[in-house]
Structures are given as structure tokens and as C-alpha cells.
Length: 101
Image: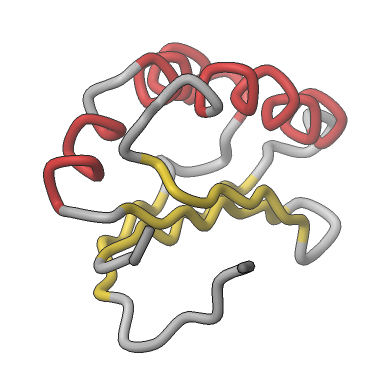
């Protein structure tokens, strides 16, 4: 499947909440695996308190479905408790990609 669009999300954990934020991707992955429009999904850590999610979608419809899905709702519910600032969610266009196969 080709990818056309993506999301780049940055999450900054409150001090002392890093382990809880680091655990979020494991629960999120189970949900994302059921989303037919989500092609790839990566959870990363790039600092002591900074985490990220990068995901790609075949179409903008897939991206919009993901943004209104269970993972986005779950992040919204824990944002005040775990994050130092609201999640920074940036839509991106995929210019080039290497896919398996």
C-alpha cells in the first residue's frame, strides 16, 4: 500500500510521569493494528521526557479516521495528568517512502 500522508506527534511528559507515558504505546499499538487506514505506526523516545509517534496513512480519510479514533480519545483523556503541554499533532505529507516488499 502506498502512503500519502502522516502524523508527527510530540508528547512531553510531566516530571515523574515518564514511565507512564512510555507505557502508552503498548496499549495504543493493539488499537492501531485494527485500523485499516493506518499503514505504519511508530512510537519513539527522543529525550528524558520527550516521546513521539509517527504514523502513515494511504489517504487523508485514513488519517482522519485515526484522529477521531480510540487512540486519540485515550490521549485526550490522560493529557492533563501525564503531559507537561498538550500533544503537538502535526499533519504531514509523505514525499517519498521505502516500504517492505
